[in-house]
Image (cartoon, rainbow, N blue to C red; front, side):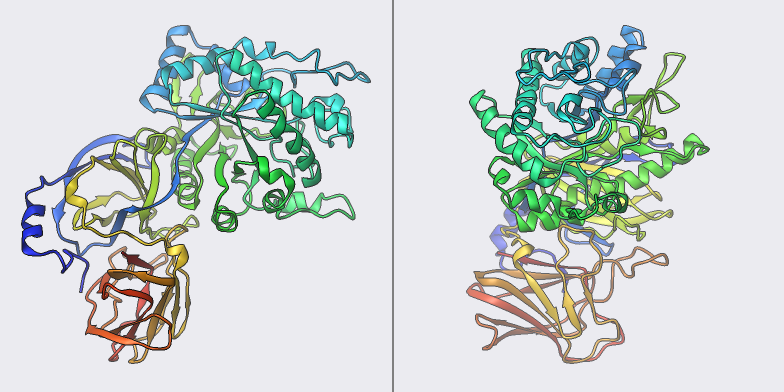
Length: 634
């Protein structure tokens, strides 16, 4: 049976449901050829019932992380190129970024990064051989010229904007090398205290200039031991703990509620960083966990990540290990090869960023998605060391014109429609960050009750699919490689009286192997017989503890995965099965026998406390049996 109107709705309830006006979804589409760039593509109406198309099921009853925002960084380089514009064009560009595109999150360097239009600097630079433990020479005057005016303008344009900050290096006099480039903090309590106070003074100074700092990290990429000609610091966990243990109390004493994020580096330690570990030292491949297991955890709001090594599932793994700590994603630059034509890197960036950032990051517990430079020149400058192939959200040309890059749209498909404070909610997704040609998505419910679902067709060919909420759905076809955001207002029509149970508490075992419940990761097939169905094949759901549930849905997902997939809904439902329930896993009660006929097999259960649900095939079939996702409803 396919998932449709719940059988327990009596006729009066059904009649009442039909009297609710049928909602419609609004659609905005971007395509990798640039022909459509967040174009308003009109509306599509929901209808009662399911669909024969591959179905993305959205369920607002199960919430994941609450979103802070989406954006980039006004680096010194970005400020410089924006100030190269005449004021009218600069104001129009800022309006486009922070009003039209609703950028809601900025990550600001504390001092210089590689993207400066001039020499590297900090806020307390001293002549070689001199120190300033009391920070008497601390000054943010450099930022008052261009960076702070732009930040104030951005905040005025979007009052919901959050600003976080991170240093690429402490002042050189605090370091073993006496240089901003490379080296470590000097192992001296006076240095740890001075550095913590330096960061507090930064927050105070920016606040006095009208720019409140929502969060801090204490070091950008602390395991990048050999930065390429730009500020950087090798900061082992032990030193990070010493700084944070001072910074947390210092912020509190100053009356500041600025959050502290740990780590601020890649999903996994880069092989080059492991190789550059000093002889005899631990490469600290589990740096985020080591911080959260230390005394510094008392002061940490969570962990920040970058994209340049590893994959997004590391964020989900950390969340499961430390569910009371949040996760932010804080950097991933667009880039291009030296000879790539603009149309090519627009297409490549749109698709890669959509899979890995817009969707891959948000489906793995990150509260933010941040790229890198807000604006750069066509040559990727100005910069002083570091990346020479990076792209900005926009490009500022020598003739005074400004063009939007792919990052504008991969951010905008979130920032225009997903409000700060929105919750990511459950949605079935079948694409992967590594590319499998399927549709991939993430869903959000805004504070005003409206819903936004971002969908990407990974395949080069058009793909048709359905989006279902409650007992309503609609069909849609996206061009190859396209990215779309669907929005609709809150509606009582979607309320079917069911609440989705958090699948993290649900384990699934099949007679031919174990299945992982894939509700908040890449969405690959969780389990399959891998051969024709045979009587006796079974799949068992363990809820973790006795629960009163109403329904278990087995989602078979797409017909196939891989390069030859048609993208159609899978026919690989259980041909005929016996549904049993148990409170202890030993004594079973047969509920009913039934058969599945499509992507979604809905198995209604008795409304009494049970812990285990077992589905056993009762006859052979030529089709395999596949499960992409298991959903359990109260």
